[in-house]
Length: 205
Image (cartoon, rainbow, N blue to C red; front, side):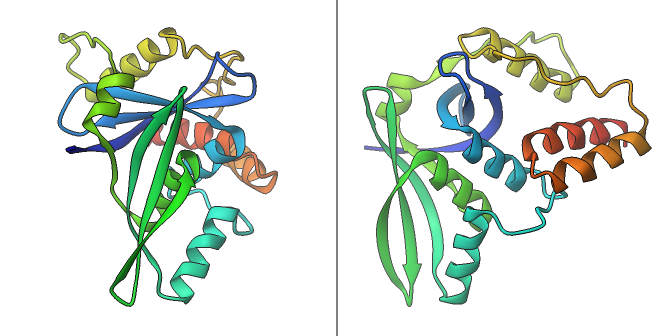
């Protein structure tokens, strides 16, 4: 079976499960998206890894795993989403130490949080993408790539992944207010809110 490389497209609230989120993976050499329902803690951990400028005051569980692995010269080389059973994705960490490879079973959300920290590629098998992948149509007349990405996520949210609670609007805040809110969110370990604030700051820079 051939492997297909995936990138992380984004994270959305999931309508299918209260308090859960949908992690959206994007086919690198194609147009299909792979939505995976994950928990709030894992969503925050992934958001922190994606937002390089957000640094938690203390290491999160995935950061601790990375620090532990670095200390003992263990490297996560890649993550493979290798099985889909009854809507549940199963993943493996391909690790290496002293030139010896080991395969470790992991929840997909944990595996991806670690892949980001190790800068390891994420793969799945073609048959899994054929079964669970979805296509999203984007308006070809949109020239701005950032607007295209926004439209893509909006369409995905409308396609059974619509948020079950509204996202706080930061557009009326000044840069100084946003920076203060960002610091407060990080101190309160509300990393999802911090990621949204950081997005708003980035749009204005």
